[in-house]
Every structure is written in structure tokens, then in C-alpha cells.
Length: 534
Image 1 (cartoon, rainbow, N blue to C red):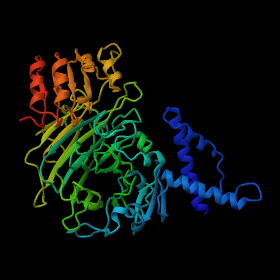
Image 2: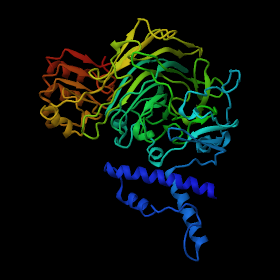
Image 3: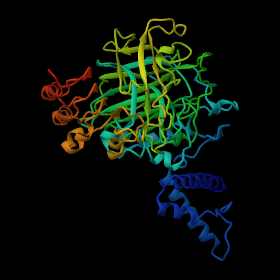
Image 4: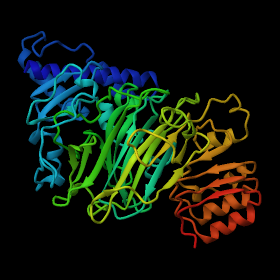
């Protein structure tokens, strides 16, 4: 029992510390904080109580602690065989493969555990030496897998875009900036190499990442399925600003399903050396040495599970069971590679959130972030370079992407550069008329010549749109819910528009385009692929 009590104590102290930080930021629930403060004098062992009913009190306290622990998720459901304390403060529990939490998911009631991908020759597990927790030379024993111990706030906040974005459409749009390349085919896997950086992410609510995606379904029907993996800097998720390996999945367009890493019961781990969420030792140096990782997602031809592998020799890490998915159960319809930023500016202080190295693609090799060795598995399931790909951008003033045929990383083949410094601090924010619109709509972005990512423009009235009469640039990329009605308001009220970005706004058609043509006579740049326009 002392060992269990120590785990409870560890989780309790970590959560109390987190709650106090939330209170300082004004984000805590006063009732919950009061509950935590009530037990700040935590005993060092379960018998350290006074009175004649010591055993009863201790047992009751243990039960209460375990109940709180189960709600907070501060320790894995399985008792670890070994616990590794990393030099960066991470705690890694080595649990038996068949005891890992994902295998208790009700959807996997009849699941058959797959220890290794079909068609691959099983070799000694690789992947040791590149994560921070490896520094002390300890790996999980054979027959176990590493699971990062996480705090309650991180585990309960499973959504990709955090608790500040409450509904489905905004989860995928508000503050979200993406630079990616995509292909649109029946797809059974993808592979790419990403160089790793430590971008500046000043606000804990923001993140910056590089990843590969496989997706199917769409936002409109709330049946978007995604599998994502890459590296990420996300202070409020991991408690620091290190670049970390991450995975994510969802089956309902980020509304309620799916999670990061092992924060819910989804990803089935098989590798004893690589931990999801673990910090990466090597990062690239601006103008100097580059450190990159190769990631692969592919659908097993026999089991149907989606596997994750790493490295040029493709070391299997684990898989997402096919039972989890709906539109991804047969194959993916799209693959994407690139960078993504969540820029909430929740403090109102115009925080910096860089993508990649923080440099624009034009800086080239050793200075800009790159993605190379891109491959796609189509009908024959063989990974081959794409014949062509499209560039996408939602905030070109802050982040861009560019194809290149110049000299790049050795052996990297076709590649592209992406990234940027993000919105820059501006003293003119308060004086610009557009600041009113940002504040009125609750969108706090210090870019004073653009407004981005409004998920339900069709619901805005003429009164609100009339406040946009001096708007010069309007960027609404990835806003799937915009209809002809919303586009009509833009055409009738935003006559001074010079640029309009409707990239992947699939809800409007010919009538909306006609309204733009009639009303926005000064428009010199229009992006609207793909839509329902004939």
C-alpha cells in the first residue's frame, strides 16, 4: 500500500500545483479549487492520522484519494512493472502490453492484439536513444510498453484544440493556422521526414507542430476521421516548451472523440523504447545541423489496423485499431503533410507563436522547416512519391509554404519548406478600426488587416457585416459552414476588399460567387478551391 500511496500523493500534489496555476490565470473553477485546498496538508503515509479510528479514517481517505485519482487520471489503470523518472520531470510507467489501458476500450471487446505488422520480419525493437527519458540508459523491460504519466488537466482536456474552443466548427478553425501539402486519392498509407525545431510559443494556450495526417469524411457531416502524428510544442499540454513526439485521432471532426497519445483508450502500443508524448533530444539549429524524424502511417492489409512506424527502417511503435473508425475503416481519402499552429492570443498581449523554425520558406535549407521523402500508398499499397501535390495556406502574411527543386537535405528527394514567424506584435492594434470587429466577435488576433476563420458566417446579419465596410483582406480558409447567404453579405457590404480567401469553404456555390463579383469590384485575389462552384 505505501507504493500506491506514493503514487496517489504524487498525482495529488501535481494536480494541486496545476489548479493553483489555473487560479492565477483566472481559469479555475472556485469550487474545485476549494476541494483541493481542503486537503493541502497531505500525510506522508496512510496511517499518519490521529484518533481511535485511524484505520477507518485511513481507509476512507485512501478510497477518496483513489476515487479522485480515477477522475483525474493521474496514474495509469495498470500497475507498472517499472517507473522511470526522466531528467526533464516526465514520469514513464512501463506496463505490461496486455494491461495497457487502450485494450479495455469497449469497442475492442472482441479485439485480437497484434504484436507486429503483417508482412514485416520481426526484429529486435529499435527506437532507443533519441528521447529525453533515454538519457539515464533505462528502457522498459521486454513485454512492457512505456506510458507517459500525465496530469489531470491534460488528460481530461482530450480535444486537440483545447478547452477554449467549445464547439465543433471552431475546434477546427478558430485561431488555427495550417501550412500543408495534400493529395486527394484512395490512400492506404503515407510517409514523410520532418526536421524538428523548437519554435517560440509564448502563450501556454497555443501550440506549434509539424505532422502527417491521413483523413476521411468531412466537417459538414461531423464524420471527419483523422490519424495524425509528428512533433509538437504545446506548453499547457505538456508543462514545458520542448518539442515532443505526439499522436492524435478523432472520428467526429474533433467534437468529442479521440485524444492525444494515451490520454484516452485508443492507440495500442507495442514498442518498449518509444513513448508517446516524450520529449525529443535533438532539434535543428538555425544555419547549422539539422535533426529530423521519419514517420509512417499505413493500413495493415490483413488486420486492417492503422500502424505507426518510425525511422528509415520503419520501427513499429503501435497501431490504431480499425474498430475505432468509421470513414477511415476501409481507407483514407486524403493525406496531408506540413505545419499547424493554434494561435489563440488568449491573453490579449499579442504573443508570438512561430511555425517550424520561425523563418519563411525562402530562407531555404538549414534555416527553414522542411518536409521531404513524401510517399503515398495507393491501391497496390506500395509507398511511392506523389506525382504532384497542392500547397494550402490560411495565413500567408504569417506562415507560408513553398515547393522547391533546390539542394536540400542529403537523400531527401522531393521536398518543400514551410513556416513563419506568426503574427507580429503591433502598437497600432488599438487604433485600427478593424480591432472593433475582432473584439466584437471574440476573435483576438493582432493581424490588423485581416480577419480569419469565422466558422458560421452565414449566421451574421447585415448589421454586423456593415462594420466591415473598410475591410481590405478577409481570410476564411477551412470554414466549412459558410453558405451562399454568408457570401452574399460579404459581397453587399465589403466593397473595398482586395483579397478574399475561401480555401476549402465547401458550403457556397455559384450564387455566392456571383454576389462577390457584383459587390467586390476592387478584388484582385480570390481563393475558393474546392467549393460547390460549377
